[in-house]
Length: 151
Image (cartoon, rainbow, N blue to C red; front, side):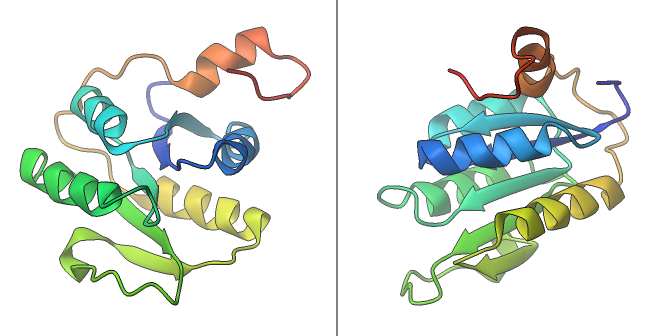
């Protein structure tokens, strides 16, 4: 991955879905990182500027809303596109100012991957970007030639 490639953070607590999204997106011209929860995701956003954050609004408890609130408090200057994925029957209120777009479940995984890629590639980079550590996708590409996901 080059320093100019867009970086994506997937926040999903379902291991299988997170692995599937990672596997599909790591073959795109994107740096891809993943997180199973809000605290880990916040730590990653403190270290790197993401073009796009894909967040499952069904994270345990109020983790998704807590993440979004803290992310905007800590990084108000971020140019990040936040794509929220939610159950259309959810009664959880969501402040529209915390997300850039919202999509409802169920989703066709390839379509979601296309949306993530296209959105990430049009987000302008920050003027003074953080020096991101290598992306998970960059590390894993060196160890996993079969394309299978591993922890």
